[in-house]
Amino acid sequence: MELNGKLKGILNFFLLLAIAHLFGDFPFQTNWIYRQKFRSWSGGLWHAAILFLCFLAILSPYLANWQVVALITTISFIHYLQDCLKIEIVDKRKKMTAFPGLLLDQFLHFLFLAVAAYWMNSLQLKISFGWITENPHFRFALIYLVVLLLSTFVWNVIRHLWRGDKTFRRDWQKILIRGGIVSLIFGVIWVVT
Image (cartoon, rainbow, N blue to C red; front, top):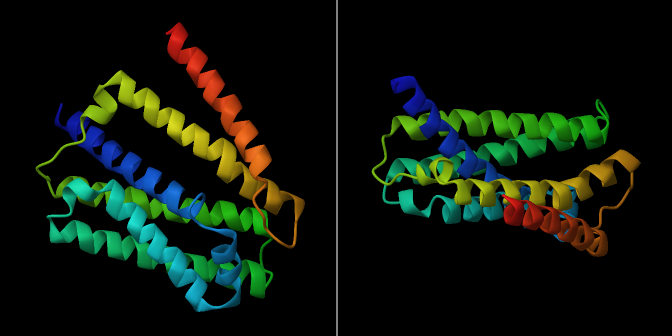
């Protein structure tokens, strides 16, 4: 029974970290920051700062614990280093094409987030987000949020890399259309269930 409680805690923290990561790595990474990451180290630092703010916002109930603030700083810094490595391997040395580079990059980000979630759970923090997986309404809303982010902003990046476009730009019309379709589907599911 203890393992079930531990696993649930780890999954709760992972879900929170993953949502913060998705927001910081996709919608809040502007076209300008994306281009700057490939031009100089300062673009990567802007991106890491935005990620840091996303993690602060999502994990705000835990900020009284200095270890959580240190973890958020570490996550942001390691994300910056991973992005620098991806740029070196994919863009500069051409050891890998952009699409597999994105997959490897995201895999490494999420692997580190899993380790961070395990560590956060071991802190036995006083405030609990157990209601995330317990309450079906919140669970449904979080699943909707993740699917919405994946089908709009993440899909836009994947499509850009798959086609091999030289310049990245957000196609807001298609993002809004896909977001509307996903919202409509989830709205129907919500009403039916």
